Amino acid sequence: MTVTQNTKTLEEARHMAEVRKDEFYDYLRLESVSTEHKQIPETVAYVKDLIEQTGGEVKVLDDLGGHPVIYGYFPASSSGNSDRTLLFYNHYDVQPADPLDEWHTEPFEPTVRDNTLYARGVSDNKANFMARLNALSILKESNDGFPCNVKFLLEGEEEIGSPNLGLYIEKYADLFQADACIWEAGSKDKYENYIVSAGMKGIAYFDLEVTTAAIDIHSSIAAIADNPAWRLIHALSSMKNEKNEIVVEGFYDGIAPLSKKDKEAAANQPFKAEEVKAQYGLTGKFITEGTDVTPAEALAYSPTMTVCGFSSGYTGPGIKTVLPKNAKAKLDCRLVPGQNPKHVRDSLRQHLDDHGYGDISLTMVAAEGAQRTSLEDPFIETVVNSAKKVYGDENPVIVSPSMAGTGPSELFEKYLHLPIAGVGAGWAYSGAHAPNENIRLADFYQNIAHMVELIKVFGVEKN
Ligand SMILES: [Zn+2]
Image 1 (spheres, rainbow, N blue to C red):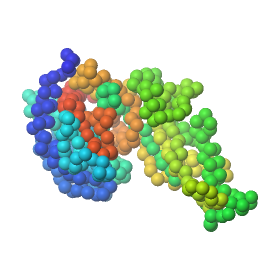
Image 2: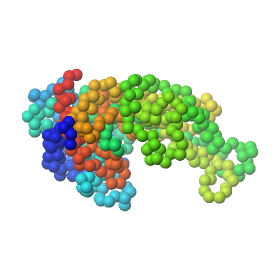
Image 3: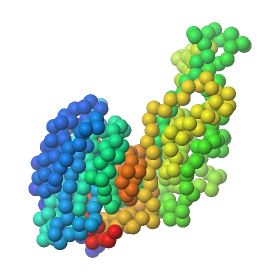
């Protein structure tokens, strides 16, 4: 323990976690698997109850379809700053627990082993929601009460791509209006750094298909009939050159150049090239080698175009001389701020048509825009400085310009116009979406303490 750590807040966090433990565990017991629409009404009622138990007001919004969106509100106390509002985004849904035989304990029965709490959805993201409520309980019991207004937005469809969230945020933008937002999840990395993430990449996912015959044909006919696999290969290879530059006109439209601060943030990432190569067993060099972009910069800021899968004809053992009737590919593009998924789709379509591949179908099957809060935004500094009070020297606080995953943060930026930062109680081996999902209790206590410190600092800042 170092002198910089705020041991009093940590002690209060540990205590409050103990006081509200049963409520937390009952929340984890709810099997709120969104893709199976499981226990959604029960979970909504339970979340409503949790917020009310903490002293907040609740509205359950369900007029626009999908699983309900929950609004929670804690007004600043009389000595607090009612001009400042912090918004917490969380989701009450979880991923399915499969494969069940790989769990060491029941996924929906919270179990502590070696100071680690196991349950489906605990790191993604029920513990983070509970940490935020615990922080509010601590502040409520303190002499000064709530230092600012605090709002919650909880949705129940994050794990299925938030298909209805945009409708709710647009309609209820006034209700959710705030000065800044803390995102649902976050974690320490494998070096025990506490990560504050300032954004996430977007995604555009495509199915491509071309059919050149009604039936599979004897391959001798290839002397006169076109081969759909070659057509698709040629079409794909026309989109990205051997220097890994994406040469689809319009693909890079809207991307702003990197600032000095952006480059500094990338340089500060604990990226260890040899470790990453060993982790994946990479056989070649990084594709950034020989370019003026570092691997850390590329991970944070470069859009990608990846052939995720390709299928055509016969791929079994031995020989089958066949001219296949069709070929299919799956293509994903990780997007950065400024890129619009629909514009990317239109650019790909135009590229295919212009290059003589009008017969290749292109369907966008998933799309989410990217979002990144400017690293110059004072909110990032507020989150970092309040974290430093808790994490001390043992857990350096590091700003990650863009996290690996994708989420609906672009909607928050679009309709609520606020800076967003992601922090949470996870660690490098939390196993979100995987069997034996877990958080370490020590991380949970620290995260509660961080939320206390953050809300306090946020309340005294001016707009
Ligand atoms: Zn998730």
